[in-house]
Structure formats: C-alpha cells, structure tokens
Length: 188
Image (tube, rainbow, N blue to C red):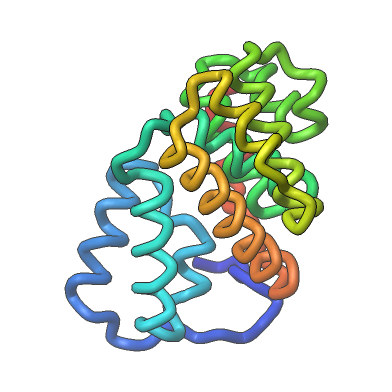
C-alpha cells in the first residue's frame, strides 16, 4: 500500500502470522479491500485480535439488531464524533446494505433528516443520547425503546455498538487514520 494508513508511523509486524494473512485475504475477497483500520492495528497482533474480536461480535454476531441497524448506529456515533474514517467507511456500508445512496448520505450528514421508520428513529435517538451524554440515560429512555419492540438484549447491543464506535472514532481521528479511497465509490 503506497498511501499511509495513519499519520503515525506504526509498522506492521513482519511476517504476519498465517491466520492474520488468511483473515486479510477474506476481507479482500469479500470487501474488495483490506480496511485501513485493520492495517492500522497490524503493529500489535494482540490489539488487532482484540479489535477484530469485538468488531466481529458486535457487528456480525447474533443480535436482534440487523446488520443495517448496527451500521446506522455506527454512522450516527461517527457523525456526532466527527470521525472522518468511520463516516466514510460505515456510510458506504449503509448505502450498500440499504440499497439507497441517499440514505447513506443523510445518515452521515444528519440522521434526523433521513427517511426512517419510528423504530429506527427511536434507536438512533437513543444511540445519539448515549454518545453525547451516557450519564443522563434513564429507565424512561430504555422504556421508550421497548415500546418499539427492542428487547433488553437489543438495548444492550445498541449501547455496546455505541461504546465500540466511540472508542474506534477516537483512535481513528487521533491517529489521523485515512479511509480507503474505494469506500467513496461503494453503492453510489
């Protein structure tokens, strides 16, 4: 890769363990690229494993939330936190999963302007509250989600996705992580 992944000089462990090479090959095959966020973690295999383990569990694992809903949460959190990398990467995922390029753009710019159903709006309003002021969340906020059919497990998953992306946003922004250029063309 010729372009820097981050503004920090974090050099990948060489050679990479075979299991990591295989993981990256699967990414290349399924996504058509190796996300720069993964490349950024290759300087420390334990951190790579922790990051990918949590990401895979939260974003791809068993949940009452759809993959699209989890990506929508990622975009809302990243938009609030002004994380360039995650807005670009997860905005592309929303475009692709929804089949609606305008939805992906609206989610990045202002999810409140997006054409969402009442369930999605409640979920994203809660995600925004947790992102901006988690200490103010009360039982009434969780109860409002239950009205829209979210289970307590779903509510935990919303909170966990918000927490993960709040951390990831800070790492991506503070390291100067650059989004893969390919993300800009996905599902347009």
